[in-house]
Length: 308
Image 1 (cartoon, rainbow, N blue to C red):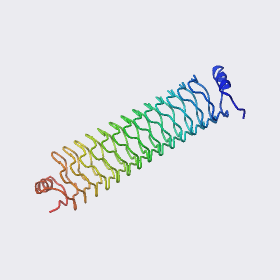
Image 2: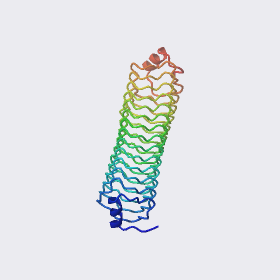
Image 3: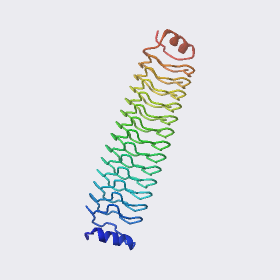
Image 4: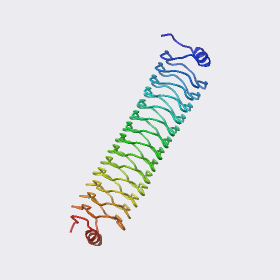
């Protein structure tokens, strides 16, 4: 393979010539105009694209390991199957990007704009994407395990069957997002925003939802064994047949929530507000923290195995 200088790369781009499979490792293209260029399967290890314009540029299958893409404009670029392990994409624009099956392992995407991006089956394991904008993005089947997503915005995003095991979602925004059948075991969602978020069939075992704002959240059929949701606002939440065994819900607000058929065995319910909640068939075996009045009311409303 020929080695390309930055000048030759720019000449090829200007003339519309393909750079597919080109050896471009360490090439410095900072601040350059590379719109629509073809870098398919190119070797771009530690290449510098910072502040460059790469709108609609094709990086399909490219090796961008440890590449610098800080503030790079990748609007509608194609990164399908690209390798971006350890790459730096702080404040990059990834609006509408096509990045299916791309690998961002250990990459830094802090404050990037990935709104409406396509990241199905992409790998973000151990990446940092703090304050990143993923509004209306598609991340279904993606792997974000152990990722730092603090304060990221996933409003209306699709995260169906996404792996968020041990991910940090502290103060993240997931309003109206869809996380059905997602894996959130050990995930930290402290003070996150979960209004009308759909977690149907998800696994939230040992997740931390302390002080979340989750009015209207959908948790139907969720496995949430040993979950912590102290002082969580779960008004009008749907927890139909949710398994909350061993969870800590102290101080949570469950006003007008649907808890029909939910399993609250061995839960800590100290200070929980059940006003107006539907509790028929809710199982309370060995639950702790209920007042005598709550026990009487819940029993009268059809809750099962209410402690004496």
